[in-house]
Length: 197
Image (cartoon, rainbow, N blue to C red):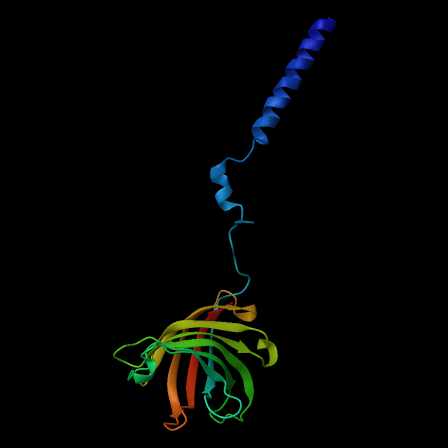
């Protein structure tokens, strides 16, 4: 009787060991591909997606004691190019509610633009609108796109955002309000159509 009980107990232990080993087997190398994935689950929003329309005036100041746009790189032929091809400018441009640079400041456009057209004045724009006013303080809207500078209206995509603009998508329309041919300073009206939750 004791031998039978011992055999049954041993069998149960063996089955538990096999079951445990199957559940805690080492992860195969193919599973290591996704070690950085912390969770994956259905995502639902508690609020409905909405579209907000903002209008900002973007002040690109290249002259004076405190420029907000600084050339940081250029190609060997940039200065002889009619389109400034190869020029890269880093910006921290004020965003205001009106075309006057002294109107209320509501954010900064931070990033860069690069002269990317050989035959036309075209720029690659990569910038964040970093908002600083009221409930939007600290929220950002990310813009990345093609800017054909001499066109009346240029449209560029919104590719993301942060804080109140997480999961943002949409587009901006840029219209040059003023351009100083002598200094190169510009004021551009940006209408921002951003979908967010």
